[in-house]
Image (cartoon, rainbow over all chains, first blue to last red; front, side, top):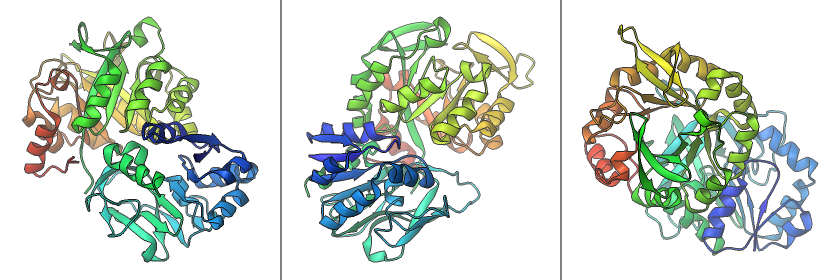
Length: 201
Length: 254
């Protein structure tokens, strides 16, 4: 059973429906005891860094997330869910992230002719050996919607990157912790394969 | 490589996909759920789902239909037609829609754009503009209620205002070209694209592959939308994408 953490942050339904279409059993929950017992956990998210951390705090989920990650339960952050795993974001400079991974979230630099948010399909440069991208071609197209991007401190955890105004770390993997900047649940067959790889871990 | 987008539009009426010729004569083109999921597999980058009768007869887009479509569609999709309030946005986004398109309601109440953008983010607020060339050649006028009522508003000014209020994208339909298959209104599309810094989806008039190339290159569109061309299989999406890619337009290939 995969738990999707419900903390009032958008796109839950899309993520849930994508996993259901893959035949997975899903529990959408904000209950700590249910999250701790899940086989796998997904932290989705659309919205802003500050609001999201506040919601997690008010729901008492910050410690829950840290506990399950330290227990070694496979954990997938999507979009804002990736941002939250890191230490801080330019979107809310005074708010501390979950700090489970080292790095920061920066605003995509303005560049003439490029629109922000980075919204649409872009190709990835996938690192060999990545678990999430197992069995896939080297430069798959995935769907992005974001104005802030990850710059991970340790490039070794980056499993895929893309280019849009700057070099963007689009996916990370470290032990049981996985995260994507893009939306696998909106990335057609490629995205479903990524979710299926996570479900099969 | 960031790509231009090809978007089939599912105009819907009474839960079925239809497509009007110049907005009025409707033909049945199938079940929206089947059609949407077929387009995902066929290489569409996004799907727009418009309840074309909703504004004029006061019917809300069925949340049920969106819920069912979202179960089968794993590419971004936009829903429009009859959306009037922030609560309408919420109900549809909650069921899995990625973006909401507003047209008449935004014209009558522009603060709907800013309220929705504040609450859900600009990325999910699409302002649809139905524009028609003025007879005196002085530009384009905005029409509401599915192209039935001339608002005597300038289309370019309205697009700029919509951006300022927080719109994340403009869905621009040329009423002059719609249904004629003689090409997009390149001039209108370019004028709007050059006056806003949010993506512009060109709509109305696609007849062949060259029309898409023209609207991307000369019209400066970020995305191109078509309905009947795809529904009646006059043009295969991947054939179109191969053609555009060969001509150096960045495309997502599957």
